[in-house]
Amino acid sequence: MTAPDPVAAFQAAETAVGTRYKVERLVAANRERVLFLAVDRVLKRRVSLRLNFYSDEPTRAWFLREAEALGQLDHPAIRHVYDVGEAGTLAYRVGNWIDGEGLQEAVQRGPRPIPTVHTLARDLLSAMEHAHARGIVLRRVVPASLIVSPAGRGTITDVRFSSWTLPVIPAGATPTQQAFMAPEVRDATAGDPVSDVYTAGGILYYAITAQEPPLDAREIRRPLELRPNCPRALERVILRALRPAPEDRYLTAAEMLEDFASEAGTFETPVVTPFAGVAALVEGEDRARWEKRLRRALGDDYELLGQLGQAGSGGCTGCATSIWSARWRSRSCTRCSPRSRRCWSGSGARRSWRRGSTIRTSSTSTTSRAGRA
Image (cartoon, rainbow, N blue to C red):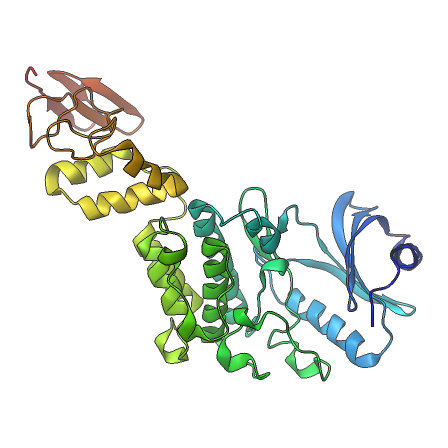
């Protein structure tokens, strides 16, 4: 069965819901449903209007059951449902309108920036954990139905094959892109939260490499082979999520997110504080930790550091130790010339450079003395 004629679909939509919603344009159509951009005449806001044109009972029940599943969920990374009903031979569902594009369309321009993948991981995994807490296993999330906003935030819009709708899915309705489904749920079993962990791993693998994971998880290539600047922490989390045996994966989406966040840093702080990183170099020479913070701060630009050279604008001229030259007046580190730098001090909102001066706050007094270079 082919998709309905666009003109006929537009006219049918206006006839069915035109008193409440002003239908503006047709966005997408397939054999199961048609999506319109509409405006709520009462609340004066844009909404998504999805119609089901087919009168056979199994397809109609599936459409309404998906709306019911979405109605159980209330998360910013999952499409909201405002209204659902039937009008004559049509069934309709009204939800929030999401500005953006599908992840599949975005990746056609190339792999997603690494900071954007961090944001996508947070949105996707927190949405899955929310659904699991309400007894719903998503089972299948594909790039085309995962909308990415201009700010990089991800939103799940399709739960047709979730565990909530599984009892009413028509016979013969086989999900496409099964590479994004865990192996244990491809035979129409309900699955559990571990199954969605595999799905999240597949989506993140696709976002970071611009390639779909193979159906056989044992044939997956490491993300670093496909994208050399992929953070090792992200690669490790993705590969664990994509393990064939469920018992080898993360037990929950929350566990996967916590493991990733513990390596990549918190998501709520968009700017890495240079002082903390420099202090780590001065006191502990923790190169691995500093490199990890640089990867997260610079994202795709991290690979440019290799082209600049160790003793370039960001390194010590004596031993090539990486430093933030914007924060230091000298080009030497403490190991080469411990008395050659000015002291950077700060407290709260007041931060400034001092040489041989005292910075006082309401509770503490810190004296910073730097010798002559």
